[in-house]
Length: 154
Image 1 (tube, rainbow, N blue to C red):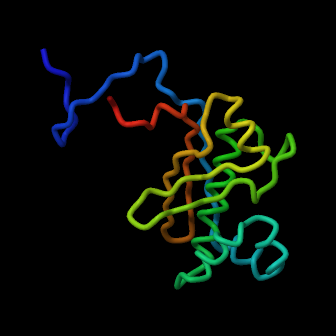
Image 2: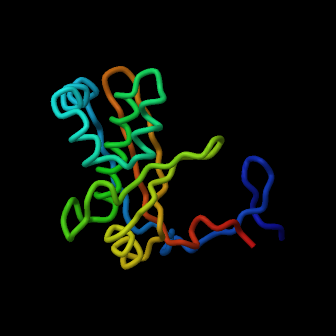
């Protein structure tokens, strides 16, 4: 009997239902007008405290930087929820970095203490992300998965 296939016709490897590889999930929603107000009030002080140089450059290169800052802020909040820590245990905002390579899905890369905690909780060095913004809102979902959960089937 052949292995089940996905909609594109690739054979897929099934994981036991008891171990999906998911170690944590987080979600966050940001109101864009509030983010705009925070950026206007605190300017560089806020941006440098929360975002990496790469994130700041990425957002500033866009037509409306605020929506990109907002969705990255939501991603960091969602990532902290997936790690189960919030901003405790020695984690700071800049240790969670949203990266998106051209043609690839965005990921939340962990550094420093957040990376240690992610590994200790059975995850890897990065979290899977889903990001969106529409109207006055930006939303992110982050998923901490076991390092082998995203590896292609053998």
